[in-house]
Amino acid sequence: MKSFALCGIKNRNMDKISIYCSGNRPHLWHNFRSLEDNKTEFEIIFVGDRNPDFELLPYMKFIYSTVKPSQCSYIAAKNADGNYLLNLNDDLIVSPHCLDNMLRLLKTLDETSTIISMKYFKKCLLVRNGFLVKHHPGTEMPGDMLISTASLTSRHFFDRYIIDKNFIGVCWDMDISMENNVNGGQVVICQDTLVMDIECTNAIKSWGDYEYFLALWTTDGRMVCNRTSPRDPIVDSDDILTVSQGRKGKWD
Image 1 (cartoon, rainbow, N blue to C red):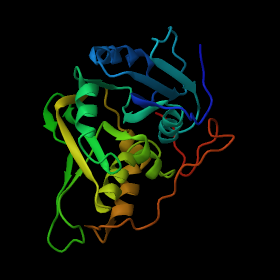
Image 2: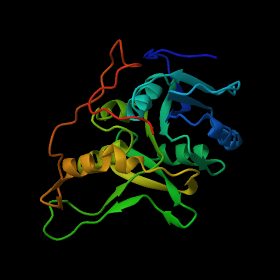
Image 3: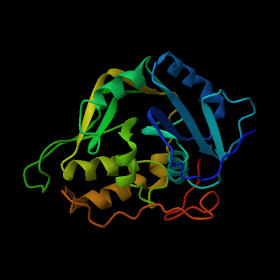
Image 4: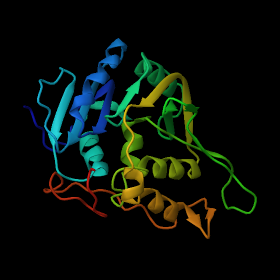
């Protein structure tokens, strides 16, 4: 079984999409075979604490790590060699040709400040075109803001907004969406894509990540247009594969 260390790849493939994924459900990884319909070159980097008991497909990599999921996502992205990065969880399935459609759209826009989001199909009931944070009179928000899900960005964008180490597993992408929005960036929904949950957990409740997100972006119950505290990014370290930075939490 191959395992990779934090490597800081220098020579990147300009048109390749690297899917970075915190994952401890290897039994679901076969669902990513749906990506093989894309013409765009891609790879998937899984980081987690459960070794797969099968041979990985040629475009898959696995890194064993016992740290929290958000840090696993960071490790995966740092080991990616594509110039474009797509964040997915390993309990998702995606529509055919989604990579081709998302990359084609992103290349028509400002790659330094744009997030391309898939349409989100939740629990077989509801399609959301991203998450809309509504502006309400009396708040400091400049207007309605879209929050992305299953987000494609450029490498430059990822390096600009490093994951905050105080998120344990979820909502860190919402935080990045908010900060990019208030800095003049945008979330654009790719209408020719769809992403859907296979399994749903209550981790968002047990980890307290949503509460942390609200603490960053609300004051007295009102949304604000600037973070209430500076970003506290994950940093490269010799023990990044074994020691969780910031707030601690478990996978399940």
